[in-house]
Length: 81
Image 1 (cartoon, rainbow, N blue to C red):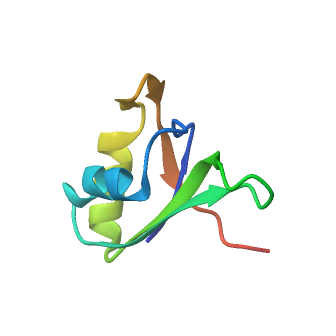
Image 2: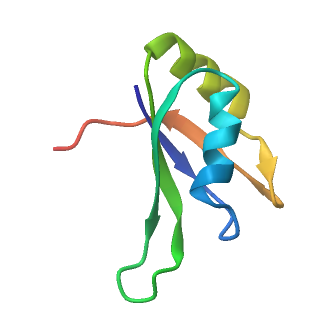
Image 3: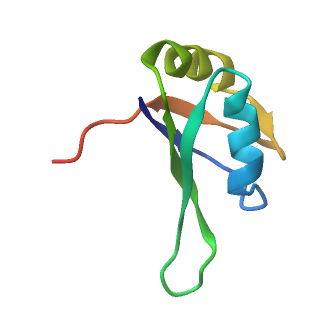
């Protein structure tokens, strides 16, 4: 399951985000999107989890969780057009 995560604090690393999702199941990948010119986080990213049930639990458990003074917005990613 591909999960969209937004409102990520600029100080949060991919490893830190992965550790929060790993509490709910196997995390296949984490990618925080960065600005091409500055290399700084754009405040959103994607987490790929190995099964839908774990992904649903992670969405339910982590949506609204405050990490470094910012509440995460976590939802199922929409397919690319």
